[in-house]
Image (cartoon, chains in turn red, purple, green, brown):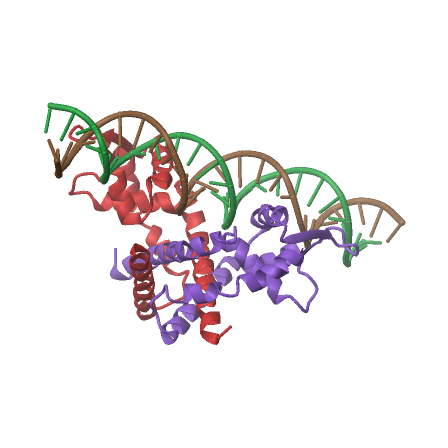
Length: 149
Length: 149
DNA sequence: CGCAGTTTAGTTGTGCACAACTAAACTGCG
DNA sequence: CGCAGTTTAGTTGTGCACAACTAAACTGCG
């Protein structure tokens, strides 16, 4: 096998491992609030949609790149936890709007410190992080284009 | 929230998304062989250990950063698939050596083209990939150090 | 208008990934 | 030596992540 193929395989493994290491940092912090990382991502989207119509399940899926097979049970758990409400759209009964209830809004304040708690863990400075973010985003975009055809 | 905290959050999300996009590329290729990505990683380690003693479950775990809770059922599936054999060590009966059987060795040849099939997907050149691999490895190492204390 | 085809959310089943735990085997200190 | 403490693999239970599928609702072409 050529060096280039070995390198590409190492990148895949590094990606797999780094992603899990990152989740390891989030886990104990989010556990304080009874949340998982994907649940936290859903809340971040809902908090950002403050001024807009509450998103539908597929709208959340488009932003987080998750399908209903993952989101439906996750949203059910958030609903049981008393953070969100799901409401069938009157205009189009296929659609389900996902809305924060007061407890879900209140969590925004209570979790305000989470990003700061996370900040130290990577050991990278802002310049490295910009390059990393942009490289990862480029890979993700390329792969999605590649899968279109 | 400061720009730096937003950036760090974006990096976490980019990592989570890129890791899943990478798995999306592997999935159909590995499905031809009835394997998942973590199963493929185990086989890569076993193929590399050709000259050495077959690794134990915890030895595999150390290399892949997975614990027995993940590996035990995964290895059971590889055993059912007829690719590996698990054998209690005679010297220390707590240990279980994981060995490839002939079908597991034969798969090495049959999968020789997998890295090439994967190579095109990222759209990055070798220089970018070296930086990416090293940055990801640094993050993973920093996080593991950070969790030690 | 009506119905073929599409969109939407949800379900079912499989396989990680991990926390918490168990049982068996081993180690080394007193 | 013996037993407290450790190591090892495995189990149980929870929550993604995804493929494949279903049912209900909608859309727009003929």
